[in-house]
Image (cartoon, rainbow, N blue to C red; front, top):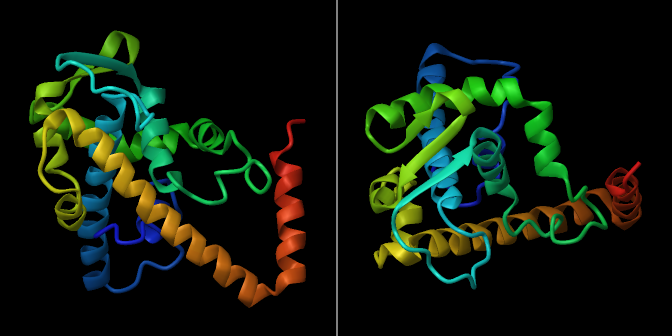
Length: 211
């Protein structure tokens, strides 16, 4: 739940099937950490939904911003792919991977995040416009939403003007994922061998090509 690499935490921000639950003590600890992880993911999704994706974009004025549920879920699912070296080129990954995950796991994603959206709503962090599956946040509350992120990540980002909060959060997560994905990719080459890695890359290329 510290998001030091976002490798396991990123996977658990999406629907997964637990094959072996372990002891009661383990289950309790896992649920606590997973709860923190999902709340942090939702908070990050809300932060990213409040501002442009491009790091060079100028800060927006404070006020109310609206977005639909698909936009929010795409932002959440996309957290663990920010800066992913495999996503930086369509050679090895489908450029529509995030959208495909959301569309293919829409109901399980709702089951994961709807209770937390309700929780955030009760805390005054998000408004629900239920008739159109649209959400609204007040950008003056970004600091309260930011406080939901893992403590270590917040310390790395540091304090600053709220207008730069989203940009700095996106930049820091991008750096974490880029480092982690580069390490995992290099481990894969060493473990599987160059020949298997090349075969894997060509197989992924086939999936990335549109039908």
